[in-house]
Image 1: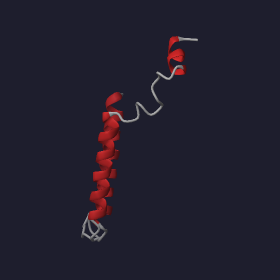
Image 2: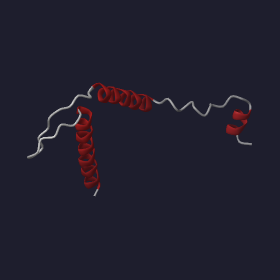
Image 3: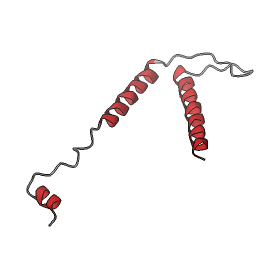
Length: 83
């Protein structure tokens, strides 16, 4: 039996969830909660005129579309930078 297994067997080992609450995970959870609050608070319609037609999506739809476009462009630049 290795020393790690011996200490766990004796009850001195760390639990499985001990590393679950890292600072990075806490920060990402906070960002996700704030993003959801932003989405649920901004449900009124806005007028957007991309090129010619005028569309009136809810504000959360416009924010989501902008975020997806930004994420797509960011990932493309990140992939191009590695080559």
